[in-house]
Length: 300
Image (tube, rainbow, N blue to C red):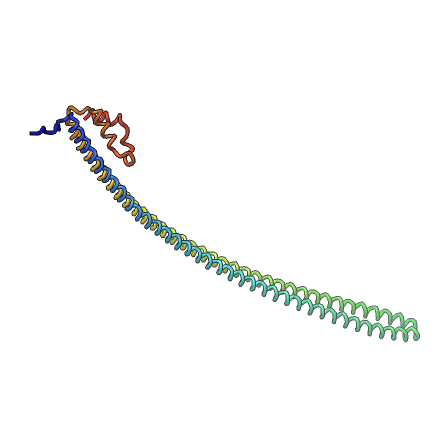
């Protein structure tokens, strides 16, 4: 009969069996962690893409709303300014034409009055000259009386003409003053009407912009709340997945360590070095510190 293999703890065959058990446990843990990381990455990729699309659509919608509101406000202000400018232009032209016609009428009236007075004076002077000539030839006393009479007549005529001219000038001045006051009142009413129109337009535009800003703020607030809720659920899901994976890995390692630590012939330092050599360095670089693991194995 052949010899049975020596599988007692401390023998080379026993040590190899323990190393194989540890290697399989570590590989199983590495596969579990790798699948958990991939699952977490896939779970996070979909919410992040969804959130980015939602934010992009919300920003485009807000930009379109603001652009349409600004265009509408600019058109309303442009039409109001053009209307006001046309009204003022027509009012100024009308006032200028009225003043021009009034000045021309007054100038014609004064010119005709001066010509009429000049003709009257010329005829009176000719008549007086003939009378004086005849009076001088007739009698010096008669000439003296005639001269006195003509002087009195001229004085009264001049006073009468002066009074007529003074009344005409006062009348023209009053007419011009009333015309200027009427024009000033018309312009004042037009300016007040234009100011009221602009004030109402500005209030309307301000109300439209205020409603647009409130609508945009509400849309952004709802989008942010939705994104925050999605991220919160994704983070909770990822945290739960990681917690379960870490608990599973910790349980597997704890069972493997307890199973190998029951061997009294296996030194703890050798067990720790073997475990560290069997761990994959690219996935678990954090576990490559020998002193803490050695102390942990000695404690257990």
